[in-house]
Length: 161
Image 1 (cartoon, rainbow, N blue to C red):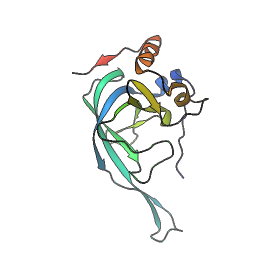
Image 2: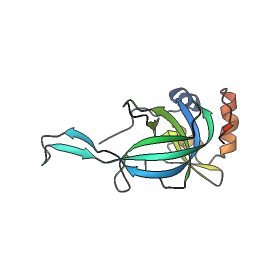
Image 3: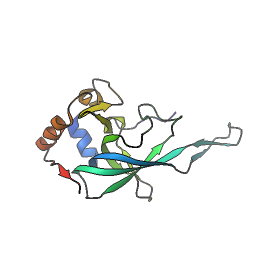
C-alpha cells in the first residue's frame, strides 16, 4: 500500500518543501504509463498501478518560476487512488504546494496530501483534516487569508496573464 513520506505540520514546513506554490485550474486529465513493480506472488509476476497526467493552468503563483501551465503526475485514476489524494476534476480550482518529480519527464507532484486544496467559493477544502497536520489547520480558511500568511513568509501573489 502506498503512503505519503512527508506530512507537513506547519505552513513553514510546506513552503520550505515546495519548489512551486500555485493557484491553478485543471485543464485536462490524461492516462499515464502504469507504474510496474515486480511481484512474484501476483498472477502476472508484477503489480501495476495506473497513473494520470493532470494539466493545470497557473492562475496565481506564490513561489517558483513563471510558467503558464504545469503537468502533475498522479498515481491512480478515477477508481483507484492513494489515500487522501482523490481524483482531480476538469475545471476545478486548486491550490498546490509542489515539488519537481525525480523522473526526468518535467512533471510535478504535490508535496503531500496537505499540499493540495480544492478552492470552493474562496475557501480551501483539504483532503486530509487531521488537526496536527497542515491540512487540518487550513481546511475551511479563506484563500485570501492564506495569501496574507504567505506574505509573513516572504511570498508574494503574482497573477498570471
